[in-house]
Image (cartoon, rainbow, N blue to C red; front, side, top):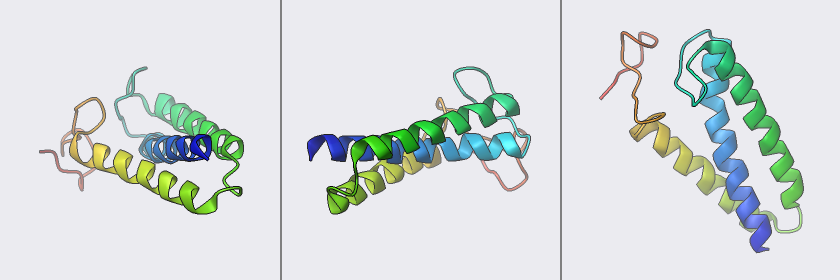
Length: 106
């Protein structure tokens, strides 16, 4: 069960981290990654993270322990969401001049 919960947590965190990168990529906006901030890099990076997330879910065998898997994945999503909302990618918040008109920096 420990392996299932750890893999489910990682799947939740990686899936949540994939979302801003994938969305910024398909909308053509820049967003920082370790490989640069170009939209195409974000699109590919987000897609790769979604694929890895799916592989982790399969490997975790979440059907064997559904409740702990759900809790662990939910915590992974929440923690990654808090990270992006508070710290931002690489400590960089998107400001109004860098991102869309609705984005506000610190």
